Length: 470
Ligand code: HEC
Ligand SMILES: [Cu+2]
Image 1 (cartoon, helix red, strand yellow):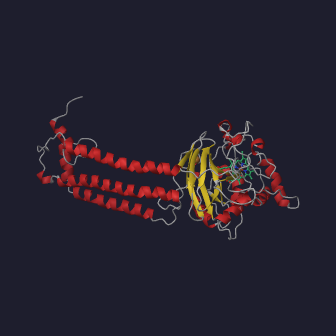
Image 2 (image 1 turned 90 degrees about the horizontal axis):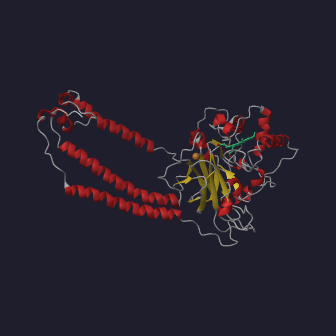
Image 3 (image 1 turned 60 degrees about the horizontal axis):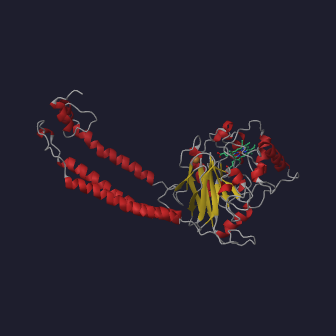
């Protein structure tokens, strides 16, 4: 390396030379003396002002379904309580560090007319006391923060007590006791929920040794999962004011489950069973978004959790566990739709008419292993990874309606007293060409294929049939 001239060395140290390459002092002087030097710097506060206003305005949005700062359940609340003082602490540290830095720079500024290129700052080795201080202070702060954080992590891991024998969310005599356990299965690019309604866990005795143990859980999910559990897709319904314990996992790649208003995130990892929980204080719809990049339609993999008050939830559950009704030949359209569905759709979708053995009847048809269970499709307000509202009230002919609009509408559409019907146009469009609505790879058995052969009449029949699935 060639040695630099004195001039160059000096320039690196000189005040104001924050540019990424050393300027020769002559250039520096030119910049500092340039007539527009002051206006150049005075625009910085203005820019900061604009950036601040934009950030502030963005935070003022009315509808913030993904806002962690507006917790709606004890778990999210508890995270928020931890986060608030940490934000304040970080704010104080930020202001102190930046303030002192700017303050010192301003204090030691040299006016251009006093600038003397031979006036070197005093060369010091350092300040031992200061250095010790700013090593210890952050360490102490971080230790305090981590103490409370680790404590919170344990707290968030707490699950409900295991149900006593014979005590279950839905007892055989119709009574309700015990807590609700739910399995969440991430999937490219939608969510499956399994309700352990008989309180025997999510797995079944595959090897027939009279015990549900790790050996049973090691089977591929499709085979290991309990046939008797209630299976729904994309929209989970939970009772308000009750902690619902979750077991989260995935059928393909790593996803992450996150309903910001109800709890933090938990990754869903294939082959692993992670515990988590959600709880909502009040009835309503709570939305989330897959937060681990999972391929093509990651951005369109949302979640919807609807919390209903106790009695309403029980009614919902009573209905969900009923098998789907098979239309009779008297209902011509529905019956035609049913037949079409059997031909074209049953290779992937499950509609449980009471006769079905989930594990036996559906070998892994898709690489991903399954498609949404449609048994009570019409009782959900959303479909396709919760990106579309299923209900009319949406302008059915408007192709340009964006996701945000569907999203807003799906909240209102959840009104059980509302005058709702399936949004036929949107569902037909989906059936006809799903990959056009949501990027998928059906040729790689990930997602739903298009059915260009279907006529308008076929679609009418299919939708008539799907509408009976309530
Ligand atoms: C090759 C497998 C496959 C076939 C065949 C198939 N689907 Fe699908 N279907 C899927 C998958 C996978 C999804 C989930 C796509 C997503 O949201 O990412 C889906 C989603 C849906 C949904 C939305 C459900 C929800 O809860 O999100 C409906 C409705 C639907 N399909 C109807 C049909 C109909 C009607 C047919 C027959 C004409 C059909 N599907 C054939 C795989 C299939
Ligand atoms: Cu995902």
